[in-house]
Image (cartoon, rainbow, N blue to C red; front, side):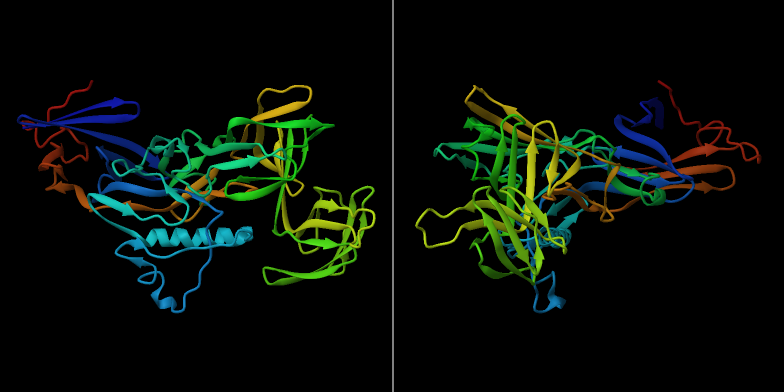
Length: 496
């Protein structure tokens, strides 16, 4: 005799099946997407999604997903002499990646994002598994939200797997660093990323995604935290304050999220650090002309005027004359390329050389101002806020304990198995993506008519298979009279 006991609990039905002295507990979850009814059956990490109980149902063992955090800075492009061999066996052998992906230190953002897509595709190929496990060989600076003993399953959050990401998971993007001040003091720091809570993997259909297309996805609702980035000094970094400048931090370098920036200017009153980097960082004399190449395009640059009294500079780039620029300014050329002034180097009396300037071509400028939105290239980045925590401060010195970027979703965001991904705005150094939903061996649960008056259910369990009469009608009236096979063969059930 098999006993089935169903009782509602938090929107689910708990089923307890007993046969002789064996007791099994299963979970059944009902939901509806559009006109389709689904139920989810779980036993340990086994997951079943089914459409309409009157049809044959596939049972899928959810072994893991490719919900992944990927650092964008050290990924690169590649070329293959024979694309028929790409990606396997050229770079994939026995389910493992065998190769190197390299990018220059000053590569453009689009090159980095292109490399990320290459890595995503390689990762999807470098997968082997069976009904009892899946192995994913990650490449580059990539972290997959999964553990050897705990895959990410439907209904679980990525923060259940790991709530914080450190250099162990992203060793290049979150590498430890050192800020060396103008006084020669060294301040070590660590970087980490805290994942927002409630980023659950779901089988869903949402009116704001692809016309309610049913997908496996992770939804991050508008204004919910996506992640928080923290750069934390082991010992508070200290600078002397001169005027409103944190002079010991200026003209120093700091590495954040895998990119090295120069601190070009500071403000103590607003607790602000202005950072800049570029594809090129040349030094030229007043009146000098040089030609540079970025992404295959040539730029003829002339230093027209250096006003060393006011520390102002004008450039001419491919015939286009910039505004007068002071240190820390950026100017956008007609093709969208930025030129940024790092430093004016005036000549001394008696020098035979002209005044000199150091500048960035293909520049990126970041403004970190406590309590404000992140600013990149003179534009505010919506929903990415900056928090700079002070240490001990005096009238002549300021200490910085940590720098944080708090990223909230500016709209409903979706990470899906059909290649929809979420990229950190502005910096574009972190993205969340999913490279697929991996299933193991398929099994069948059948619900079907047996004769004219009975509905039967067949299901495989771990230790045995079951076959039982589910419903019975005593009269030919399309109404079910008995839970079981007949009036004298009722299935015992109990509501709790």
